[in-house]
Image (cartoon, rainbow, N blue to C red; front, side, top):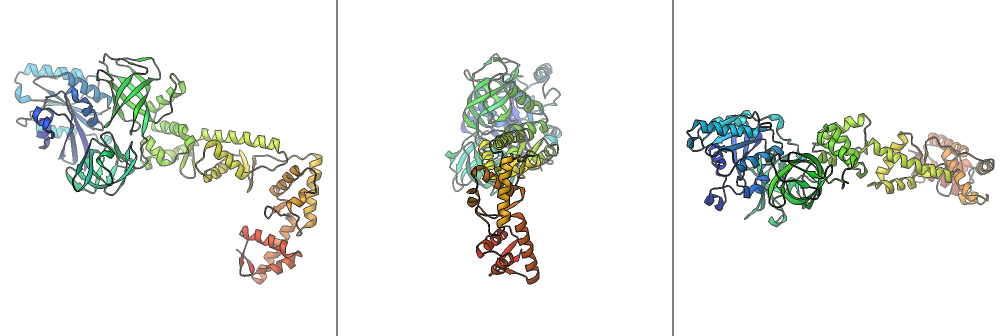
Length: 635
């Protein structure tokens, strides 16, 4: 079955609770005070199965004193019932609730005129309905259907049920991808024998019994011990369902309304949020830069300061970009809708859309920051994804991070990243880390400068030690591990920025240029190794034959890099021609006899046991041969 969330909104005492009772047979006022005073204080919830749909209905408070409770429950709804009592018509909280609904970007609504049994004056009914139509003109409810009902005698109740189903747009139903699981907490309590239980509306994803859960922003780890949906035990709960979760290992004090249950690493607790801020058309309040406000998003509430990024003052009806700097952490996501209320007196004045969670602190009127926010506000998902990857490349984040950041399933992120990578806009490093092409260029520019300086200072060196180069990359770009540095070396080589050997790294196309004096030294060293053949001198012994030992060392390294010498280990190098002859003879011997002993190899190349052992150990290390008992065989 498909799961749908229906919310009610409207003035106090216009019959929202009675309407829900008529639709579902359930009583949503559960508090003694609610029943005593006849008004809804906390959000109430009821369930209705109709056709192919599980419909969860949220009964929100209408009284202005309980607006904060209403805000905690109304996020994530698919359809709103704007309830207007025919006996009173449009009232102050009708208007305030509707302004809030517009800010929450709800797509579908129905005008429900209640208490039809109390009103006989048709002209009055017509005036009420005209006022309601004037209220919703130009909004998402401008063409909304309307219906007159009575909870007292069930007049048009069945028709309203059908109207709700007829207005469900399946394209707006929420993703059930498991990795997107998110459930804002609106109640926390304890049940004897079970422990801590929370309730909330599962607004995204899927949750199964036994799943690992992180509680945000506290970042506490727990598991779903038991689940209930529609007051029945279930093995899984899905997006759009009112859900009760029995949490393992947590006390009631460990979380509160405003906490969010979500998949591990899927949320970033934040005290700073980039937003598009929209002021209500009818508010008389203004928001100046630095104004304190009450911030509401999902079930989260926090005080914060508004930093206006593109103006000095936000006035009624205006839309602007701002950064909210909160006084406590909240757990929210990109594209979540929020409401703000004036600090004092407490009055709802606007809201908007979350553009970025945990952004950098922006300077006011920063053109680059404003351009970024414009793309996050109005760009395509492809444009937003490329921008976010560019901005976050320095963190070397993996696919899971970007999926959560962009509010995408793993499959959706993979498809998008594949397209961007195919076009060369982003680079996939080690099959998981995503960086932008522009960031790779920063790494390339740094590498070019680093190696150019090295070559200038070490003109006879074949290149910088590879491990030293990787260490400098790691330090400069704060790489999370050495394997990432190794892959970046490969990427830079593929981009023809560097030439990477087994031990050294140089600029692509770099060649050692020898002066006549250095060329003479090169020939002397090469001649010495050619003369000694298998009676190899140590590197230190060769250096002692030259006055300029620093450049002599560079020449030895260059001869190894150029292939004229083979470096057996840190002590010994061998003439390439002599090495090739020894290797050829060894292979012929093993091909003939199946193996070769150390003594046989020593006698074959006419040297001492010591030097023969150095060569054989090198061949073992290079996996050309392997030792079996007292002999060598080919691998």
